Length: 134
Image (cartoon, rainbow, N blue to C red; front, side):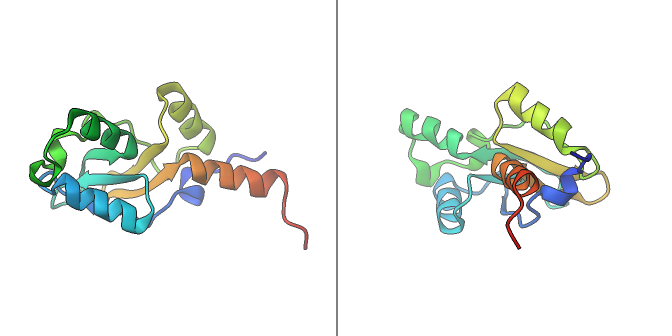
């Protein structure tokens, strides 16, 4: 298999929130868009955190009043990222090593530009390994 870059498989349609966005609003956004994560950005589109469905398990377990709780209380701030020019093999290795299902894609100039997910990688591999009949 040829070396493919993250930019080719990443999802560029992102849903972002701010640190102050309430958890309840974020959960609704994720449900409406059928997504497993949102990125938390500042006014300059710089990555500040990520909130995933896994974080919502913790929110429910702690029984916090979600309508009064900002995303900043539960988001992951120490984030590992990739660039669009990284190979998907390297991205997959990072995801496996850390148990991630979502990996933000950032650009030094623009900020957050996408997300590569386990679904993106498996979809690519499925098409590459067993192409659809013509």
